[in-house]
Image (cartoon, rainbow, N blue to C red):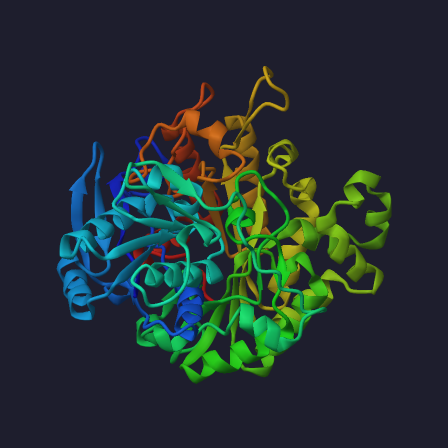
Length: 551
């Protein structure tokens, strides 16, 4: 079987007029390239290989990173595709002669490319079984199957599901025993066009380091086999979070924990990756030793919620230091947990009882009771080789945060400023993430929905400007976008004004409301970029095509 990341596209169009970009003399707006080590494919490929299947991976965006071509015109601007061209992908597929091709689709904006690759596979041989998975495919499977030639969707966390599907498929050829409908966590289209989902719930792995030995956890979550990738593809001087610190070797995106329990309405991670689980520091120690053997010299930590347990995070830092791996935290540090840790025991004791009992605060409060401070944690990160973090600030507006099931603590601006100063003091660059344009369903049926106003968005822009004054390296604004499978999806999709191919990137306005248009939100995003970062950083971002963050 062949597992493929399809080539990607990005929008190039005239910058809005008037806008902050136009004032800088930037007449064109381009969505940045976004791609990374295919961790999800590595996980399912490793499981499948251990089960005896012959697996290969093609990471099209990185295999053809410098290959760009104009794909098609839009109403305004055009799409540029980057990665391997269709002819090269066809040649590789024909050379391998796979029985099954799996296509990753993490991003909704890349669904057209995943679907086009499935068309190419079926054109080569209609008998090849096609499978898709990832955040978009999982969240929108009811539309993905009728809209494409994919035969199956593996839903959400598919480490074990994919191998079970392979065993069921080979059983139909008489090689192994199995039953497709007995495979948990898949969906498919019947011969009559009807859709089938085999289970209502996803079979998330029950990984419990305190109760399970290392061998049992390795059976469930084998060490991702980086030998399945051509690591020479990941040696650029820039990765997605900015400039590298090592001049040789490869970079790789890895994880020490998976899943998240916060339950933000706008986030698909709890659905796709499941609840927060530590893999165990013994597991992570082996993982780091293994990737070093494959020429990895620095890493990007992609944990969904690294700060869920600060004491565990401290041990992760120690292991990264042990293996001499400088690192970037790219998954997004939960600012609310850092603020809680920074404010300390008195603040905790003064909190409302209901807020204090938030289960996402439990481990942080326990760490505070044990004497851990935010300074201790940040010092440990620096000592462990951390040189850059992505801090999930998100909004200056408590109402916007609370309406989306996010803790209000992110809006405590003085504490955030002090935390940014702490990171800067220890030599760690901070990229702050901000979200603009929240749209939430009404609290009760018949009530008015919550729509963040342009005036509230101005406050978030001011917040970003303030944090830059406290040493933040870069302010990175995202536009709130309805993502398939999230709690917001069914409600927000009524506001959608752009299709998958030219929206859904978080850099382009996808929705419009009675309060603002998609173009208004895009202008506000550019306003934050320019006002917070300044002319030099913005022009450098455009030149590099990635965040202008240098350690």
